[in-house]
Image (cartoon, rainbow, N blue to C red):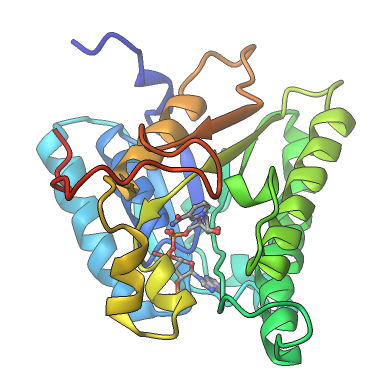
Length: 276
Ligand SMILES: NC(=O)c1ccc[n+]([C@@H]2O[C@H](COP(=O)([O-])OP(=O)(O)OC[C@H]3O[C@@H](n4cnc5c(N)ncnc54)[C@H](OP(=O)(O)O)[C@@H]3O)[C@@H](O)[C@H]2O)c1
């Protein structure tokens, strides 16, 4: 038996944006294992369907009787019309969401201010900030009407500390931090919980996207240091969601053991990227 009780998640319905890869995908599989239903949303439908199959397998292997309903829904969070019509594409039995994981997000480039393409800074704000706000606005009325629900936002170490070459990404994650803080305060008289997860370095597709598909540039980010992996953050998300209803895990700042800040880390040698 597990030390921490995750049975509260059984039969709950979780909506995860950016569930086609990385942290979102690992989180979907872990909620499936815990006996939840999961709506997986992102732009790449084929990729979502692969993760959905992993959810089905994880749920079956766990042998939990509850939950186990999954749906892959195409969603670009930057497209207001797609966000607002999201529930037209969700099966009827999954329309009452209990946990929203606002995970979709990305960073593009390391250009210094003055050299950043307009399209790049606009796209980062469209997804990381406006997309997160739009999805939250879509669900919050129902959460308020039912006086329950949990909003889990993916912030970042970049939302606590700016760094050179991260001007826009850091600004978007500072915005996420501020918006999450407002939600926490506005919802204090409700049963709705609000959590911000602030990871440090996690090895996912994140850096490959940042370096526009250049895998060797992305690999350099993790050279000589053991980064977190998506499953490490998924565990934090699922743990926060599985606390008793009167407990609100407001923030989780989670780093690799050899990372101390956005720019201070220890690269003492090539360590294996295994998760023991
Ligand atoms: N990796 C890190 O070091 C790190 C650290 C701190 C915080 N974070 C945050 O954690 C979250 C997840 O990142 P990750 O590391 O898992 O990166 P990832 O592996 O690149 O995954 C990003 C996910 O976001 C989705 N996405 C991107 N644009 C989208 C859009 N317009 N609409 C809907 N979905 C979209 C992608 O799916 P599609 O391409 O299929 O749409 C993908 O599923 C992000 O918010 C990121 O800022 C990551």
